[in-house]
Image 1 (tube, rainbow, N blue to C red):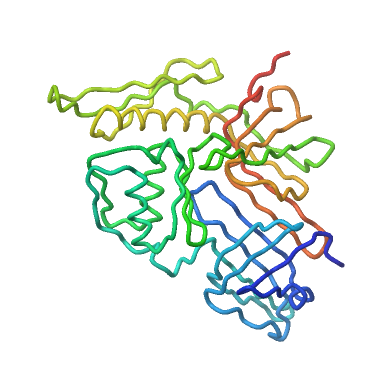
Image 2 (cartoon, rainbow, N blue to C red):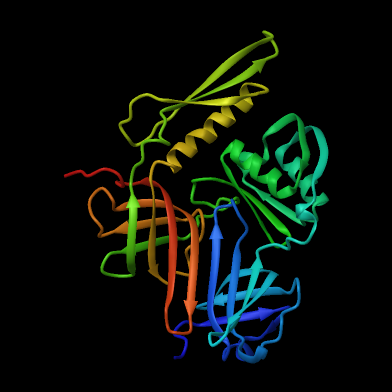
Length: 340
């Protein structure tokens, strides 16, 4: 059965789509919100081993419906087969070269510097050409930054958790964006994806509110040098829900009041994000990407509304199917409230 979705695969700058077409069984692309690398897998019919084994570390680009949805390097190849069951070759690629310096432990410090300067130094040591940082984060100034045996991947993720961001490496570039804003680090709005019951929406499974991860304020302990004493910074949450009072007490002690406010604000964005969750499946939506907005319509009052996309999976196969699956969080704009 012919493919019903347009696709192209480029390897090391060469378009191999025509040669691959008789053998390609399916394409799967994953885009997550910074907790892991983008990934892509290509499954090929490998009867009699006629498919040439791709080169380790080859650069791969995959296009769907004329849109570049993945670029990265070949990370692994797996051959599978059984007696009477045929043979397949699964080529897996990551959004960055995991064989390189990004996984090397870093041990260095920087005094009286901004977060932008510190991460730029870390990126340079890890072979990253550029790091794009949200302006709200780039100017954070501290008298001491350090990496204690952490790779750039772990360092970026640790700092992102602390200040409420999303850290991601793609190719030779890295991004630290402000989480939950629906914007790229430079301020440009990300695409909005709409799912309509009776239209492009195949299925949904959504809980528009959850109790356990919901708090009304954060409490962060810090050391005040002027008074030589420990103090506490409280950050109130303004959530679109009627909740009994509960406090997210951060166990670690931070160095000063400014850092305490940053940590408290990060916990606020986490409370907003974890207020609800779910999964939806759509007809192929190539505009969907992590951290963009998803609007659900036609499900029911209290479930319809706006959500934040936490992860995206695009899947297409030669039997004719092509779908986009979304993990969604951060309900808003009516989600969680039945106004009837």
